[in-house]
Length: 525
Ligand SMILES: Nc1ncnc2c1ncn2[C@@H]1O[C@H](COP(=O)(O)OP(=O)(O)OP(=O)(O)O)[C@@H](O)[C@H]1O
Image (tube, rainbow, N blue to C red; front, side):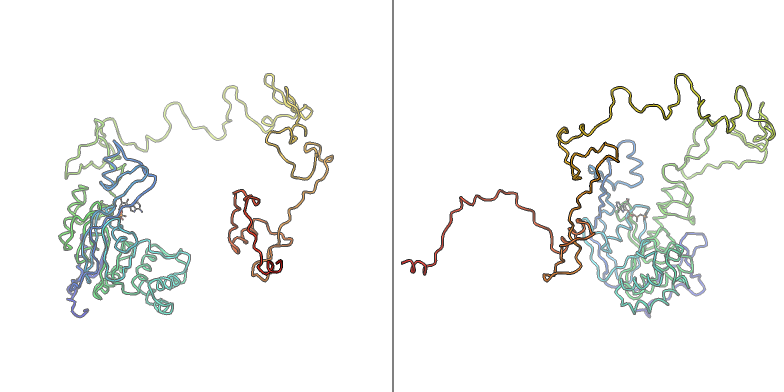
């Protein structure tokens, strides 16, 4: 099939792909290949997340909430249902590279997860011809292990033998441009290095259906060029590629078809130019500030544009204290401050260095050698004055220092408890003396108290050998705790059955049938 592929961009045209849309960005296009039979059929798929602990959104917050997540969120008591994908249907064919675009939260990642079988649709069906491989920003790489080890594990996960995976290491290191870093734990990698390795691993084997979810965004231009080539190779080998990206440039460059998702539904599905143009128009209209050729970040916003609650709050006010009226399609230009006499709206004026110092009014700088502080009745606190003398401590009013000689504490009707107070027979509920110390008074002075050695419970010995039955020998003295032993025993011999709580039957009442040996009868006879 490779040889039938029409040639790519004409010679001399730049190959490099940048994920951002800049004026100089190349309108490089993905090579169109012959389309094969269907590889993915998505039939009226719905995906609903259920989030516990949500609360109904009411009144004033409703519009803001709707603006953020659209109509896709409903609260059902304590469970919030997020309808991330709502009735999506399409057919993808072998050899297609499909870009999935949409603003934040439009359901792109969720749709890919449903197609990959990682999240079951709540309604509808997905049919696949081939094995899907989802490469997301969170693809599982173990940070504590070296890149080399991750390559081997990744290869095993993708169905290779260990030897095959090891043999792929040099190729992957070369592709991901890791050098000797491959022997270091991945904690030491930059995000770009990790992204390159992730992409390289997941394309070791040519997947039937490759799904790339924003995983290329961190790579540099050279890597993106290589990854584009690899994606094309997969398509040429009759694979299907899905590419979720906020970068329209990369979608234009790598895809042959685009699906635009909006609030969980397909808003457009068609050829790259038509859908991308419409999507960009939508983004421009939505923000009123995205220009053709401007950089579009996630959510269709221009980079650096304010978003969220605080957006626009920092705009200067006019003289009447109101924010300048917003005219559709126009942006108010605020004059740059001129040096010196700056235009001041109302009573505002620009601060100069002279405004900042020196101090105005009667304040003056206090020289270092000036005695301080000595205003009014204040006096300097010395270590001596701050530490109270042993006996003549401050005694304001009737307060005095309590000394060792003071009887303590015996105010009012308090008295010391004696053993009689806590005797079991005098306490409701009844304590019992578990120490074996009899009537020893626990409140008596320690030297007069009899020393009582508590009787140690006999704890069975931890099995050092097994008996003939194969079970550990549970008898004998040991230092192991009884609980530990009980646990071990349970794992060996299973749970003990609880004793029956039913009363034992009255044996007297059970009719006794006496069986006699007929020979005895004969003998008797
Ligand atoms: N695990 C989850 N639990 C609950 N809601 C979720 C979960 N994952 C996604 N959602 C919600 O589903 C909706 C779609 O999310 P999804 O991540 O699929 O959108 P997206 O288009 O990929 O967004 P982005 O461009 O920001 O990656 C959003 O409203 C999101 O809040």
